[in-house]
Image 1 (cartoon, rainbow, N blue to C red):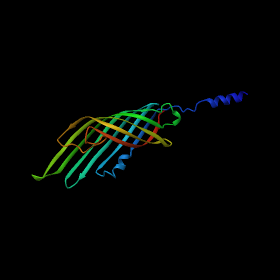
Image 2: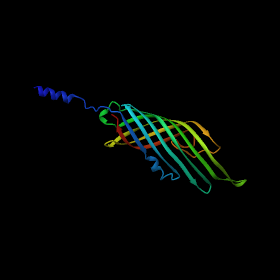
Image 3: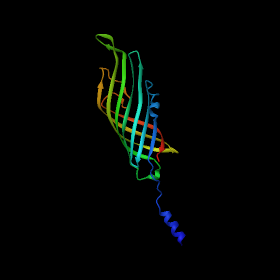
Image 4: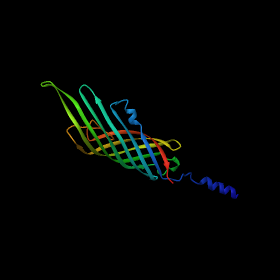
Length: 209
């Protein structure tokens, strides 16, 4: 009788997994896939995050970027990098049984810098004919904010995959010349004051004692 009561009490206990703070290192792979569509672009991106509570994760992202375009009408090149910092808010913090799988909202502050030049730009005019101009090397700085959301799921062991979609809003630009960059690493194509980006990461989680 006592044994039956004890087994019944154990069965009624919830299946919970204690939360452990962790550090996660990630590599962004979507950019490498996009190189097949945009071979003029190059770059890499890493992320480092610290989950100190079940619902909050501090994140830092850094990367390099470059563009190399050589066409009869124009030649353009750039190289630089970016840095982002912010937080993720896990919407599944009350489900520790999911063992690290997440659906989250995110916010980031982004800072990008680059050096670019255009040794040749050919201008065709119906009246004046053809002319060419050039722009020497110049520096460019940009600041922006990001909001978005995504998910992260376990592959096996401490390996995870995750993706997110972000709306990026330009806050400020600092032009070193009249030449506008074609692409800003971490932000996207420099067409207007906003962009939408998709990122896909592979992560490894390091538990912290």
